[in-house]
Image (cartoon, rainbow, N blue to C red; front, top):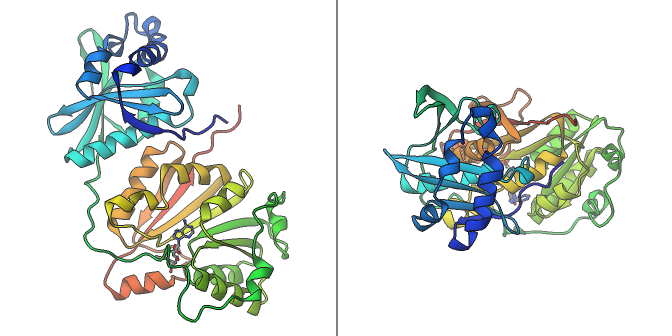
Length: 379
Ligand SMILES: C[S@@+](CC[C@H](N)C(=O)[O-])C[C@H]1O[C@@H](n2cnc3c(N)ncnc32)[C@H](O)[C@@H]1O
């Protein structure tokens, strides 16, 4: 599997000209034979576009792709999106689209628009996959063009704080409990293979709950489904001890715990080893400068995608509409997931969570999203 793109997106500089010219050539010149003449992007004046501030570069130790986009009729028009063929399959195009979406949101544009040639079937498929829909098809300047559009979610703008527990690691009356020591996962040792052998109980599948708070949902889930191994990750130490005490007190043999950030735990898990990941009422981080701390990110989607088995799901619940929009736009921008349901109806086996009860008491309406990884079978 190609290494996922882990770099950054930045504005193009004059010093990028040679690299971008090569990428443009390598990405588009193969289409000359198919279309019967050089495709339009090959005529891009890269130095002029850099000068106009229209170029974004996806950089991971050097340029791997770039976009050229500018405002047109209240929308952000993508003139060129080029990915180095040697970097295809790494999520470079998705990352550029996400950056363009953020730029469009910041400027109040309502959509991303582009056109591609009707004979460029692969590009058409990629754009559909990235959440674009076809809006028109016509013959223009001697080319058969397909016009595509992707609406941009309005800028996320939640005023005030709705709280977040990350960072406050201990509540009043905290005491360490040896129940936790028995269930704690040692990330310094390799993950057992198969992962089901992590548990004392005989389990047939493994699920992960990220940020379980006080652990009520995790413990209910473990008690109801003894053949499922439950891993819970939570940095809030008081909640962790509560969950450990409940698991040991109820004699549950299908629970293991990680105290801390879920991300190193996910990186520790074997590929395709997890049947479901629950992310229930993640901290919304309402201030824009904190959005990078939100658990749903392209990097975390990529990390989760690796560990999810084929047919697995991610459950995401939130009472913050802007975080739901954030999740939808990240999933659309990430080529590896699709949203299979997005509804105010809770899952049928849903026991609710402490945070959900608080949200309902305070008059907020939860939304439940189910994501599924798109797994391409090995060739
Ligand atoms: C708003 S609370 C929701 C708790 C619980 N899921 C519920 O619905 O009652 C969010 C929880 O996520 C935890 N959290 C935040 N960032 C996390 C991370 N990177 N990894 C694991 N847990 C995290 C916080 O400590 C907090 O307990």
